[in-house]
Image (tube, rainbow, N blue to C red; front, side):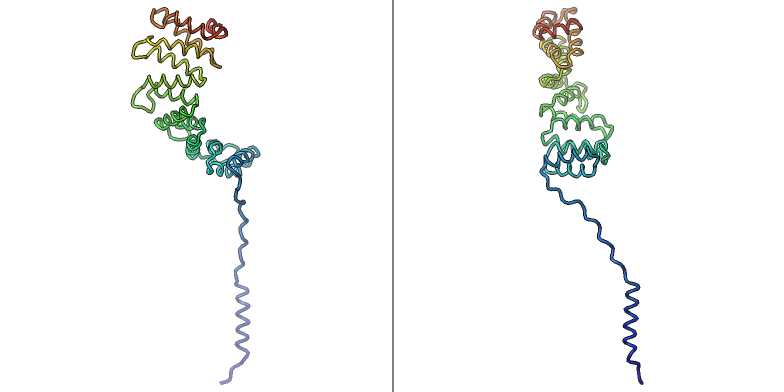
Length: 264
């Protein structure tokens, strides 16, 4: 039987045509991602804040995240600030913000301790957690943050985050806030020493010293008035510290403060 020798060539040609017609086109390669960041921690933080100011939130988050991952406390705190409320059009992630503020606090940024404590105390953006909130205020107080010391005192006084009230620890925390320049902390320390020292109202004459320091603070007028009313009341009731101690405190507070006491 004879065969046409051209058939194999024809078949090969048809196969090539079919393959060309049915072949898949190669998808274009995806665009390259942003180049890896090489900035130092503080530099990344600065560049991130600049990007945030220029309304480039994605770039800002990326830079601040690198700054934080390299152990820069301010970078962690600034990234937390973006995520806490979606600042500058950035993503909003309050739960992650809490963790970032916590990290910033433990890296030495004292104000972050008080911020995360407030978030956990308020329970608005994240679930309330009073014991953890108190722990963060305590940590901030150790790092010499006046607001953290003052707020820890409020928790001790109310027994919030604790099994029961602890006026002694509250007075100590208010006193520490006072020493850091918190005028209302001075007043609260005075009140607790005056009302609750060893369960004997008025037994601790140090109270008037705290009232005097409240008067010397930057926001002295309100605390001054409350302290003087308490002193005046003690004199009327003939209980210690009484008017002589109040007068000595007024004298030590200085001329400007004495005028403020008289106005109150």
